[in-house]
Length: 246
Ligand SMILES: Nc1ncnc2c1ncn2[C@@H]1O[C@H](COP(=O)(O)OP(=O)(O)O)[C@@H](O)[C@H]1O
Ligand SMILES: [Mg+2]
Image (cartoon, rainbow, N blue to C red; front, side, top):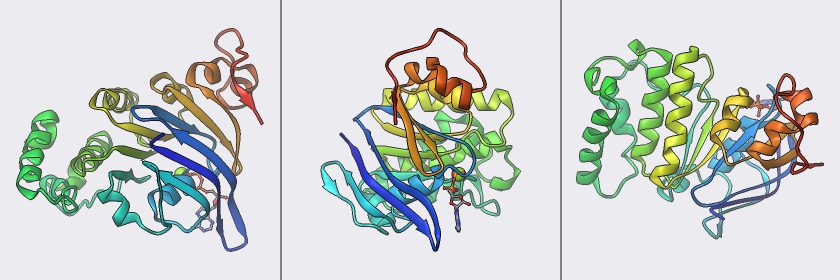
């Protein structure tokens, strides 16, 4: 396993956002964390990334992480693309990409990777000197993912990458995430657009008010009657017996 989360609890003062969740991600796996607004998804990925205090244990690549170690975690290849993307709108596209390599010890190779990234996503190359705020929402998400990839992640945490995107751009972003598996990455994908997230994921966890209430293969969750009726807006196919309910 590249990531094992055990009994993670997060609270904001008297508000308990996570009541003790367990989840794991195997190398090269795309795992979806789905759930309604306020379920605790962002709290989970922020805590895993080292940006929020938590109790419980996060084991990354075989070793326990220390809470609040976000910068150290980035150097270890644990990289978060936060909800809202974290793009600096007043800076150029290129400057935003360069932020992705600050943690890299191999600066020369990293500079070359910035150029390669602008070839991989030509729109970013065309707009390299333009302000990031002038990109469309989808292009900004592309920029945020490109910047995260430049940090050479082994595990990428994506918090609602499709939020606010037009349907066409949403499909582009989901296809891009699916393609990251081919690059050998592991991905934890937080989404409210559960159906589309499940399509590109291997496994999934369903979070409800701070608790994981179902988990299993993405296919079994998508086909599960209870999950489907409650969270995915109705059933599409025959039920499945492979989903674990808690
Ligand atoms: N900074 C904060 N201060 C207080 N409560 C918060 C804060 N951030 C989130 N919460 C609360 O924690 C719960 C989980 O929020 P969050 O992790 O953002 O859920 P999600 O990402 O699934 O929408 C919600 O009840 C939310 O109101
Ligand atoms: Mg959130």
